[in-house]
Image 1 (tube, rainbow, N blue to C red):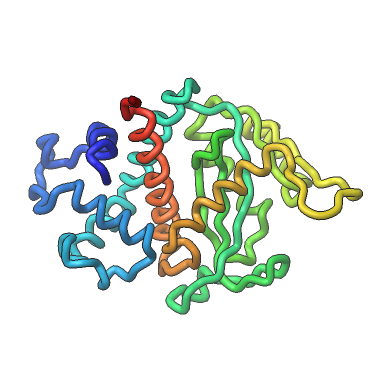
Image 2 (image 1 turned 90 degrees about the horizontal axis):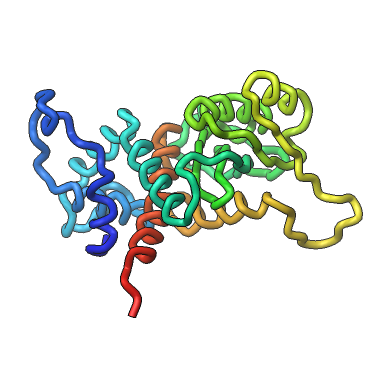
Length: 263
């Protein structure tokens, strides 16, 4: 991180328990060094054991990553950054509309059969990332499943999680794969309108569809993080955490650039 990014990040970091008087051993490494190490791994796609010597030992970095993953601290940190980005752009911190979609990616050999499947539509053997983003393309919720899990099945669980956190959410755009009973379920149970943006039958070639391009741009950003070009994580919770870390890269850079004085 640059000094400008660190100035943005530092006030938003979760406070450790030992600093709140709840006991525990003080951490032995600077948070900035730990964050830089994890961001380096996500951005460059290296192995944990291949961490450069400029950073703390790899096992300490992984312990930091695991603690933030299991205690949902990375999600808390990510959500604070998202609120800052939205406010910088003149939006409310809580969104009222979003877009849902999924992405199937190949899985590495370390991924077990319990979380691996075959997506017959995309012909991909691996996992599927189900995401909900706001109208700015910022992540609201993610769930990683086996690739053979249907979009409607996963969307029902994911949308319930997102609606529980974002109470102002009223409208979700989706593609034709989310039709059926899911539309009625969202309206009656979640009080959210699921609007289907379909591709016309007379369209030929590539056509930009309204609202759906937002989530496609989000997936394009994920592919720029080399750790996410393929699923290398043994646990789905680790795969979800990697997606949150990837988005923090984007948001810290946006905030640092927006607050940089211009000559």
